[in-house]
Image (tube, rainbow, N blue to C red; front, side, top):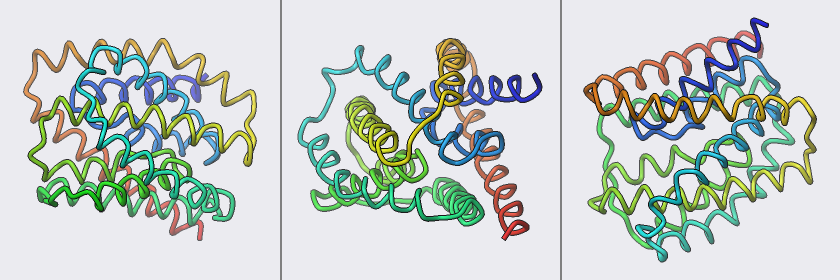
Length: 241
């Protein structure tokens, strides 16, 4: 019962932050799910729920999709998917957790210091490739996209729609790839089924909070959660190595 309650709270919090801050659900959910599940289970649960979120949100903003950018991300990600699968199947849990902790801490630092980068065609493909690799390996396509778009002057609505459309593709491909080559189990799908109503509740609550409270507060909370989780996973992984 305690395990299930913690799981529900993780999904609820990640869903609320998805709407209220604009950060990807997977960035918040995956590290905490790793505390409850084996890496493959945590990643597949995250991918399934992220796929549901992307599908539910894209309907309203599909007209804002930048087709050219979406094609570049998609083509770039195809090269990253098999590399990510190789990492998932070959890296032990201690090294796996250590890698995620470092990624979270680096992401937090770059966001806090307002990292800037100029968007180009070649970088679009590269970011897509890195995102594909991270989706298959750790279920988190968001970090490279989040950092990449931090310094761009592109219209925010177009960025959001294009990112969600790309998520639909890369989550589906990554989930299918993992099922074929790494397998799946009933625990993953049962947990995902229970979590879907919680996801929609979190998205609704996040929107209500977003309309009433200062977004800067949510940003600070997000940074604290990212850095705190990163530090915890770092210490835990170093102890186990």
